[in-house]
Amino acid sequence: MIISTAAAVGTIDLKYRRSAMNFGIRGLDLARSVLLPATLPQVLTALRVAVGIAWLVVVAAEMLGVEAGLGYLVLDARNGLHWDRVEAAMIMIGVIGLLIDLGMRRLERRMLERRGFAAR
Amino acid sequence: MTPNLGDVFAVPSPRDSAKPKKLMDSGKIKIVVRDVHKSFKTKKGIVGVLDGVNLEVREKEFVAIVGPSGCGKSTLLNCIAAFEPIDSGAIEIDRERVVRASKKRVFVFQEPGIFPWYSVWDNIGFGLGRRMPFEQKNEIVMKYIELVGLTGFERALPNELSGGMKQRVEFARALAVDPDVLFLDEPFGALDAFTRLEMRREIVRIWKATGKTCLLVTHDVEEACELADRIHVMSKRPATIKEVVDNPIARPRDPDSAEFRELKEHIFATLGVERRV
Image 1 (cartoon, rainbow over the protein chains, first blue to last red):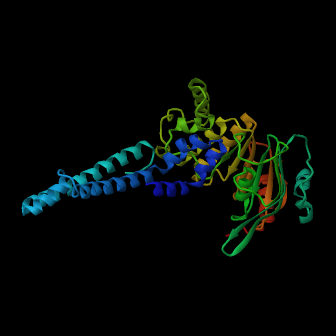
Image 2 (image 1 turned 90 degrees about the vertical axis):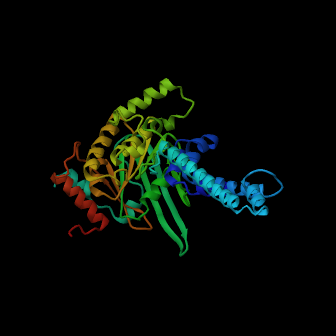
């Protein structure tokens, strides 16, 4: 996320930066009023990817050393040869991941629309 | 041809025009550009863009720079606005060397540089700073919204506006900080023909009403003739000022009048452009 945000700041349209420069906007004001809003689309996309990865990491972590959660359920069911439960857990992992992504996407779109980006 | 037009059209030799022209009437000198050189490094080597440009602009004057596309006229304006450094020479505004961009001289971009994430109101108020009390800010912003005829669109976002309206917001944002100088970099380039006409009339009205010094860069000779008091004609890259042409035509100017056409012809001839298609 940090990497993509930094890259996004580097690609801000020159005219926006020059406008800010022209009106003497610098430092924290510049970050708040120009850098952050201008990079919002990229930052939000990066956030969506990051949350997706986080979900996978959570599930994977549940397979190690804990005794709860979907990851644990997959391992536990497999050890007990309950294939139906393994399948159910796998589907659940997928569905929850999908729902998270859907929610993020909706949030992204709403924020962008309110911020004047024609993302529809 | 009337005698005074003959004087205006007397073509100085290239050697003469390289030096700053002696100023004819009074009026304080606002902007001085002296022997400015500028080049860019590219993969193919160093490309000279400005090759000893001289320019003077008086206070409250409307000056245009015309030249073929890619000749470095935008670069010159960017240098005067201190967006880009120069290699050698000097640029002075109010007798002070230009080091950094300032609110006292505002740039109007070809593509509106207004922020798409801010409403019309917030955009116009942008240059006033966040610390200004709301009442005061609102008064100024509403004044300029009215000036550019956008009353009722205060809360609209830029992508809800047409191109001409965006350009008006850009003008209002520039005027709101009450600058001495307006830099206009082909400000009507992105507009359709109708809106462009309307905006030209508008800018003359605003210029007359506010008394700003305006420096316009354009490739449109007719636009330069309509708007400017003096027109600097640039050569191809690496660019110098080929000639400075005074525009004696009284406003409002009729682009179909004989003197207007003559002025235009003269500039096209200086540029070395064949006009017939």
